[in-house]
Amino acid sequence: MAIIRSVSRLSSMVLFGTLGVWGMNSCKQKVEDVALTEGAEKRYHLEIVDSIRLDYRGELEITDIDVMSGEILGFNFKTEELIIFDQSGEIHELYSRGGDNPHPINSPVSLGFYEEGKLLVANNFGKLSVFEKNGTHVKDIALPFTIEFHNWNQKKKIFKVSDDLLLGQISGGRSEEYREYYLDFIDLKNGNLNPVLPIPQSSKYKVDQYFGPLYPNVTRNDNFIYLLLGNEPVLYVYEIKGKTLSFVESVSFGSDKFVSAIPSESQKSFDWDSNYKEMRPGDVQFSDSFGNNIIVVYRNGIRNTEYNEELVNDPLKSREVNPYYIAVLDKEHNLVDKSVALPLEAKMIKAVMPDGKIMASKNKYYFGQEEDFETFYLLELIEE
Image 1 (spheres, rainbow, N blue to C red):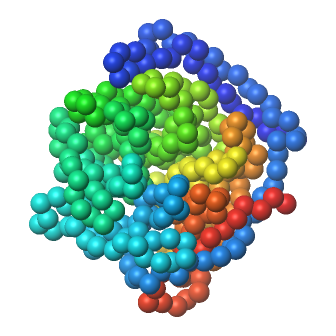
Image 2 (cartoon, helix red, strand yellow):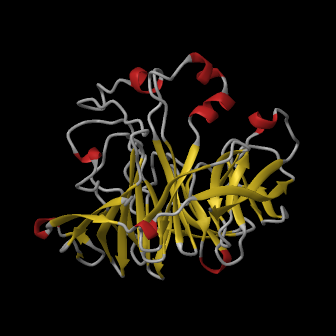
């Protein structure tokens, strides 16, 4: 059985100008259906091979992994504590720069490792700033506005392109309306922003309907940018070339089990009860890469015929009925397995380590006990 991948190539989409402007008037989209060979299909399963015991208690979000050192960067959005630790569980840094600090780290839109072992922080209602890993403020990067951003996830959203250029998600305000662009090139010489990355032409979000919040997730792998949109099981692939960004292809990994949101004519008329109290739409969460593979984390959702009060009140039952899956692609973006289930012992995938191990939080509902430390599992993708 062959897997079909829809490949959309824009033969002439190029960004023009000093930092890049979409050349939409000259774009022609070519759509092909490419059948992958049977040899491209593989079956995997996830196996827990190790764990990290962290002597810390709190709701920790993993925002970035240092690909060189393997250090793990986390942030507690309730206590505003920043923590850096390694796979052995050793804590390298733990502090808070919230509150009335003159250069705070609080409610970050993007928090990630930066050049020369530093941190790059974009604070909501604040500035874009560089810090030492120990929290010492180094400098602010001038922007023509105060950052105000609807933060739908806590992962790193700003990527270094060159010494003078960043690419990231920091503008657009807090509205859940669909926007014209979802990324900005940030010129470090003058602080100017040039918007890029509109909703792809082939996306269902491009039609004149509202499918609920779009929740775009953007990650970078070498010269590629990967875009995911909340209720759409499609990976959109773009390529960075200097100061240009061009659409390459789209890879669908959905099935008939993926629950689509019920659309409305506009954001104001969107039926939240029908979509989130009577069912649970599928959600595509994030992508990551390691070695020769790219993974996409998603859930299929729960149809209204299966949704009930028990699922609302029982997190473990809900997790069983609506499990997390990963789709696996190779480095050429061929889909090789679209539904590798996360074991029930793990609650949620947090990140991918440089050695390819997948980091996931422990499912405390499964074990039915509270602990005074945090546990993260390390899983390997095993070919069957």
